[in-house]
Length: 333
Image (cartoon, rainbow, N blue to C red; front, side, top):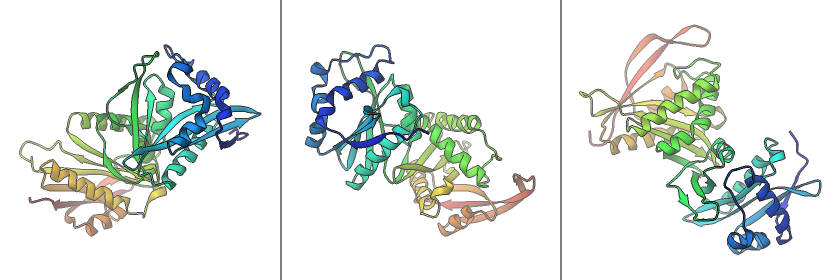
């Protein structure tokens, strides 16, 4: 990985280089035009612009040239907006984008941000993959800019900490990061229907099916973040038979191995129970491998054992293990 850059605070004098960098990125996409004086005069003094909005601007230099930039500013309601994320196309894949976003997110979080938001042109598919890898999910309707490029923008957002339900757009955009979490949990020994090594294609296909269920109203899908990183998930299967409209099944409570023992599993469980009540469900069921950490969590959260199934599933070494069935009543049920 090439780490020959230096990241510093932006200056108004960076204007010409900033404009050249943005155009180098935009020019790769059809229909994108640039008229700085008409639509973006702030680029001539961008450091002052963001300082005047309570934010900050950073510039990455290498060999005396500007090769990257990023900015953040308060967006109201404890949210901060990430802006102007650009990396010289010649340095895509170098890690510079991650370094810039790390810096901007740390600044926003230190300033009290509880939520991070950004906008990205619908044509910038590479940028979308980058943001989704960083735990941002689609949020809200498209934004129409009515500019000379006829720009439409996707909204992206993520909480700094906490658990939230994903709609169909957010669930679809989270597939790559959810696949990371599932692969890591299976590799660490979690008994969640898959055996290691779990391929990325299989993991991504699984989450794509789950997103489809979310869109059809058959499933609630939650994601959990810690310090701005998506590290956990959980689901509520609402697709029960017609004689069980009061029941839902809790599935795939996953916390990335690097983020365990911080209480996220408990937060996800409680959020799923609240979602079940909101959906009119009063009886929840789940199953878990006997002896796994989840078993102790469920008992501590008031779940009751309903029985055991011997030799229910296989481990990676081919040995069979028992599964414990749990149930819990929620709401007024």
